[in-house]
Image (tube, one colour):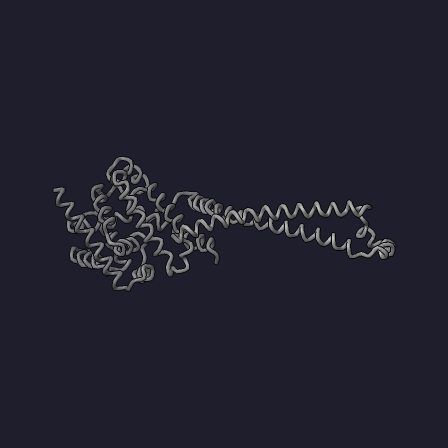
Length: 170
Length: 176
């Protein structure tokens, strides 16, 4: 397999997974797609290093998360989840969104952004991609037990943040 | 499902122990409404992710990426072509020199008394046909051509010397 083939057959098909991952951090469809584009081009630039890779998916996901964090840091203002633009866009694309309290979404979003890498990737793969614990373990290169611990910690943290936020609202 | 059953499942969910089926069961239950406030947070958490499950990249995304990758390859090619051009020029010079040298030599080798015989053989007629009647003219032409080659080779040599001089400056700078 040459490099272009690896790219088109193994890396490019991950685009939707990466998009959902980016979206769960930035919560803005267009921005998420821009990030995925940057990630894919960056990965292509690093094609000399692919030979050392054992799993492309984990590598691409980690890179997407890091780029999201960079972007969020760079332009904090434009990522306010409660501004009108993002509200309109997400409401159009996601029927569930309207049902969920906007403030709760913002709360989960910021919790997701602050999760350690493994916790973030594990919960993302489980909740959005619907992967089994075993698949997640293989993808992230950790044990089954560690997968469960990471998911447990991520869910618990987000739940606590939500409860805290709900109590503040009262 | 009664409250206790939900509670057990919700705790299992938080512990990261639920199967995918159990998570579906919880989600379906939460969607029914009439929910105890205890589960509000977990319900919200599950819904947060439901909204992005079907999300895919926009149309033409893949083509856009592939065309950008093609664009990116070109600068590398241009760099390589530059050296290819230099190599081609050198090869051309050497080749031209070789051909001229050979044709000059062939004319020399053929002894005069044999020329008549060879002319009789039709096959070789074109090959040994003299281009110059006067040996003086022939000599002049050969000298002209050789001078031309030598001039071009010197041009290359000068460039090489210049670059070597540059390298020397660099080497000195590095030593200091």
